[in-house]
Amino acid sequence: MTPWPSPVPDGLSGGIRVVRNFLLWLRYDGTDFHGWQRQANARSVQAELEEALVCILGEGFRLGSSSRTDAGVHAVNHPVNVWADTRIPADGLRKGLSSLLPRDLAVTEALEVPEPFSARKSSIGKTYLYRILQGDVRDPFIERCAWRVRQHLDVQAMREGAACLLGEHDFSAFRSAQCDSPSARRLVTGLPVWREGQEVRVVVSGNAFLRNMVRIIVGTLVEVGTGRHPPEWVAELLAGRDRTSAGITAPARGLHLWDVSYAPDLLCDGAYDW
Image (cartoon, rainbow, N blue to C red; front, top):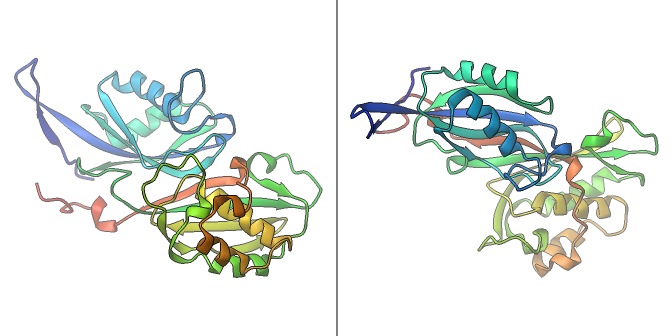
């Protein structure tokens, strides 16, 4: 790919340095992380990535994330920006990071993108996967990344409840008390629910999400699936806008950031006027 350099005056040398914008796709098992954001005295994805980047780039880089995952949440595709003054090619950066990052964090792809491109601001949607493990036989390979629900779940009832959430609504009943977003209106574009082997899987797609919104949606649909509430209860929750009336916040371990989407032309040459 042709690089998109951003000329920046170099005050020390009097010359011009070039800041390049890399888009990295991260994948991680969130079990042992306290979320994306760097925290004092706690392990975070951001801190691990920054420490590896310092070894390759020194201190002269800037990092931007598409998402701020909570403690215990996993990611299959988590895009982040790295702006840096370096001659290292994108795939060279990926390979260097792969040799330094811990086993539960990986860079699966690296791409050079136009300097104005932002993993967060350029996003047009996100998709999350939630995994629910059924039955009473434990599976050590899945327990770290799924919520075990022993009661049988009626998937059809869950689908009917999920249909009430499609479209643009005020999701006040589906956000945590700590959510500081000025507006609770969000657009949910997809919410399929299906059974796959011993699992029930829920995928939620939308333009953006409130804090804990996906986990509260899942906790609510599980109450429908167990028969505690009928599917139409979900529509009543939307109308009531009361968080205390909705289902529990499903555990973080079942949640996976599956994808962050961008307009295809934003990653192509000519997408920006210079």
